Image (cartoon, rainbow, N blue to C red; front, side):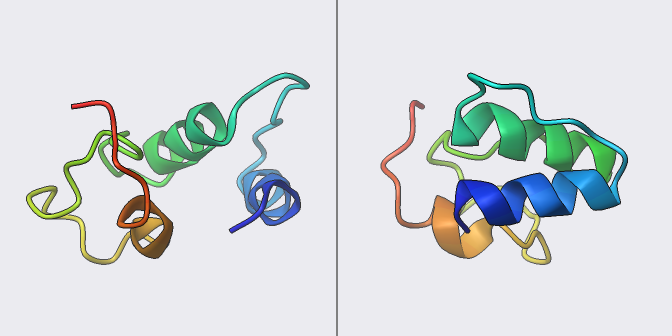
Length: 66
């Protein structure tokens, strides 16, 4: 998902993605709003237990910060 798509998703949740936010910060805010653990980009996709998270495909592509 690119930043424009992330902003649109946030808008649908009544969240505002502030200028300067990274993709990781924005996605974690959305995850929290949707009731998911804000784990995007932490390299935990294989054990996160959130297979229905719409950000999972992107999360699997980044090495994470463990």
